[in-house]
Amino acid sequence: MNFAQILREAWNSLTSNKMRSVLTILGIVIGVAAVIAMLAIGSGAQDTILNQISGIGTNLLFIFEGNEMDGTTTTQPLTLQDAQAITELFAAPHVDVVAPVIQSSGVVKYSGESKSTQIFGITPEYQDARNYELLEGEFVNEQNVNGRASVALIGVDVADKLFGQRDNLLGETIHIEGQPFRIIGVLAPKGGGQFGSQDDVILVPMTTAKSRLMNRDQNRVDIIYVKAISADSVPEATSEIEEILRKRHRTDLGENDFTIYSQQDFLSLASSITNIFTVLLGGIAGISLLVGGIGIMNIMLVSVTERTKEIGLRKAIGAKKKDILIQFLTESSLLSFMGGIMGIILGWILSSAIGSVASAQGVILEPQVGLEAIFLATIFSSAVGLFFGIYPANKAANLEPVEALRHE
Amino acid sequence: MSKPVINIKNVTKTYKMGEIEVHALRGISFDVQKGEVISIMGPSGSGKSTLMNIIGCLDHLTTGEYNLDGKDIANLDDDELAQIRNQKVGFVFQNFNLLARSTALSNVELPLRYAGQIENRLQLAEKALTSVGLEDRIHHKPSELSGGQQQRVAIARAIINNPAIILADEPTGNLDSKSGDEIMELLLGLNKKNGTTLIIVTHDPQIASHTRRTIQLFDGLIQERES
Image (cartoon, rainbow over all chains, first blue to last red; front, top):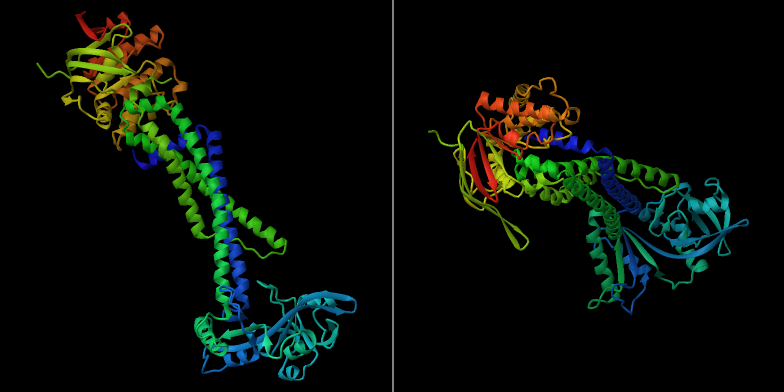
């Protein structure tokens, strides 16, 4: 028999019991749709998270004091001199910008409105290191730092809360921890980051922060932000910084007493987390596909029993084992294949529906139905049909013609 | 004398029913010449069905020799037997055994499909249906046909591969006497016209009387008599 005939015969057999076939297919449809939707949402979430992280800048490095990995007990704090040393062109040719920062949280007030926010004591390099742009005004400059000026840059979240507007705020006086500061600029919105919103911040000159807001030793800094000259030179920049700091902290023999994270570390961490998340979701959805496959097997077994006599007759007039095997495998594969196609369509609809619900809620999530997910679902669902069809088909093929013909 | 189309020698068949061995056939020998019409009779439990299954290559024999149309059947495996059934045996069953969802035409062409024949299938099937007088029922399904007509479809299916023998198991058992007579006439007519060897298994002496020779089975052994 040629393929078209086999297919037509399988089709006729399935359509002769439409309700049963539809219900069996439904199991596969739901399974495949769940897998497609879950994978789409997983990769959509991954994209959103990775975009946010790379929005901060993929050539950015963060240096913290201490070493969490090894629990080093004696750590030297990071200092302004450390930051200065890193800027040395010859020692660290792959470093572009170095921005030491001290930070704490504090309450900011303006005429009765108040807000708790993150306060950063910065130097002018911070703008370049973090790619901040301004809606209006100017960034903190050297004079502000040297003169311990009581000036502040505010993020849009702070502006929205205190003023209910984002422009015409220059010159207004706000109180940070009770101290008056004049607004010299409003930061352009950057969206969320992994450390909370990057728009819910206030930036003040580091010297001012030290003398009026935060209790720090003269030279101590909390984080040093380093921008490498390009994303590709991050590893070189990292080892250069490591070498400089080890020398300065005299940790030639021991472990580092500081920690360097690169944006790429966060990226790979986040992508491995979202990958696990995607696999987990896909795996749970895969279980429903498995259940659908068992449904196919069940129906095929019923079908073989019901059609024992037909199988006997087919064998009597010359059907070989192979012919019967192919007949039943075609039926089960056709069931799961159709279920797979419908499941892909349903999964697609489902994931775009979830995407629009998410964006209606203000969450940026664009589910992505990848070609490989479609490919995977098609292959997998057909394989499910084949796999769960093998046992019933084999049972049919091995029936003794004499016994089968006698079956009532 | 030409070679017999069926040559059976000392055939035995033993079933195992749990612990007990059932000797269904206990050494049977006979020949059937080409173009002959014979009947096989016997009370139930005589081994009649077993013998039919073996002649029809549906079952393996335990010991003995069986030669069908020049082919040694005794030692073939399942798939080889399927091929022999497809090419050399046409079955006509008591309850017709047609595929309920398929038209008369599809039912008749089915053996050709399993033979792997691609061309002319439908023309041959139509010709076979015409030769049993069903040229105007080609696209009807079994449920739309009378019992006699269904049996005619079954006969058309049996002759489509030009088999060496037609094996009819109580072919009139489910029919009223008028349809039954017509079916017997048709079978005997095919024998006369095409010289097809016809073997009828029956318990009805009336049917058996249509045949020149009857093989009478008792308790797994033959009591042959010329009629």
